[in-house]
Image (cartoon, rainbow, N blue to C red; front, side):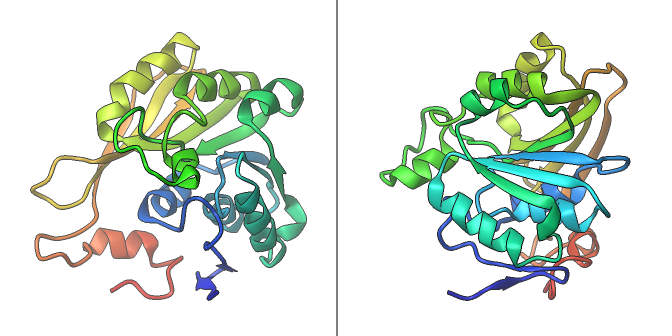
Length: 236
């Protein structure tokens, strides 16, 4: 199995339910880490978001959780092999059980959660765990974040754009307010298909931005290259 190399670290992503992908990389770079001292990555998979956040912080302690055992084993291996392993830990647990029994309040909680509610059901049980909300529904995610987030903390996640309003409503009912968002477009003439969102207990005007990944000819946009250039070894 070959390592995937970033400029700051290298990692495996073969056994985890979800591999390294654009959603996770953009979220890991976009998420605000200013003043953050402890972080929780919910549904860490291979640990890519946790590692990106570790590379962007000096001494933040990072905990990662996943329900899938092989994902936890691979993430733990990736953490140990990184320059940040002494401040990273992974927990093999269900977030339903983890949230009530864990006393830590986190400055930042981040998640690339299961996307699909009923559609596109995969025949692979591991892919179902990774991408369908039967393993972590949005209510469970919001309830757990509410318990574990520090009063001035932030919660960042990536979702399909079509699920934005549903999730914003659930979060607001729990006292978590949308503060910042990035609408992600695959190409200029396409509608957004993903959205990065930041929530917190403080209600304030939403800061919104747009991000286009590829030009019409399929090449990466200059902004995408600039955005990921500090992390990817080569962006063509």
